[in-house]
Length: 350
Image (cartoon, rainbow, N blue to C red; front, side, top):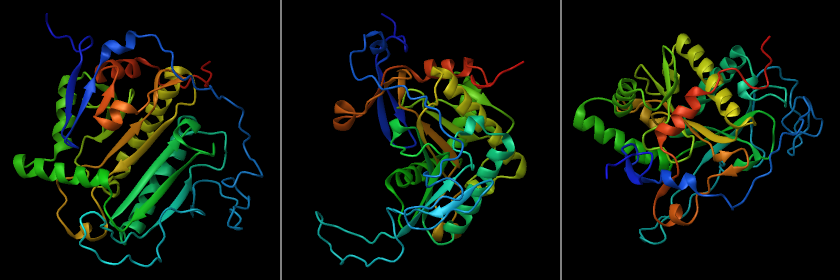
C-alpha cells in the first residue's frame, strides 16, 4: 500500500515551534454527532448608544468615547496587565517561582460603524488600521519587551462585542509563544545563515501547494504544520523584522491581502467567519538595540470552524494531553480557500 497524504494519518513537524501535529484526514468521513453551534447572523445596528465601543458612548470607566471617524484607541477598562504594581518577592524555589509582570492593555476600534468587519471595509480604511497598529507598536515598543496585537472575531472565539476592534497587550516579559519562536528562529539562523521564514516562504512559492493568495509583497498560505482547520500565515516576500519595517507599498499591499483572505473566510461557509489572529515580529524594548535579523515579521489566523458555519474544531482530550491533531490536510484546506471568490458574498456585483 502506498502512502496517500489525504487518506492516511501522519505527523508533521513545525520548525517554528519545535512541535508535531497529527494529521488524520480519514476522520472527515465520519458522521458528526457532536455540538452544533448556533449560526448567528443577527442584524447589528450601525450605532448603538449602549455599546461602549461606539462613538459618543460612555464606557464602564465613566469616560465618554470621542466622536471618532476612523480608528480609536483607549486603555482597556478591565486590563489583564497594569503598569504600576508591586513586584513579588524573589525566590529560587523550583516549584514556586514568580517574577514581576507589568504592562498595559489597549482596545483599538477599527471603524466607527458596528456593522462593519474587515472584509467589508475599504482598502483605505484597512490601511488606517495598519498605520495605527504601527503607531501603537512604535510607541509601546520603546518601553515594553513584547507588544501583542490580536483580534478575536466572533462570539465563538470569546468576543463579547460585535463592534470591529482588536486588542493590544504590551508586557515587560516575553510570552511563551514568541519566546519559543525567538529560540527556534535564532537556532535556524545560526545553522543556515538565513531567516527561517524567508526560506520557508520561498520553498512554498516553489511548491505552490499551500498558497491561498499572494501579491507582489505578501503571501498567505496554510502552513505545512497547520493545527486549526483553515489556519493561515501571512508572510512577507521581503525580509521584514518588525511591522514597523514596512514601506508604503507594502502597507497598501497588506491592506489588500487582508481584505481578500477575510473575504474568502466569510465566503467559505457564508457567515461572518470567526477567528483569532495576531502579528509576530522581533521583540521590542531592549531588543531594539540587539541584532534580530533571525526574526521575520508574520501574521497568524486561527479559525475554529471545521465542517460548516455551525461545526467547530475542539481542542480537547488528545490535544490537551498529547499533541495537536487536525482532520484535513493543509493542502486540502489551502485548495478550498484558494478556489473561493475574492468578492464578498454580501456584495452585489452588477
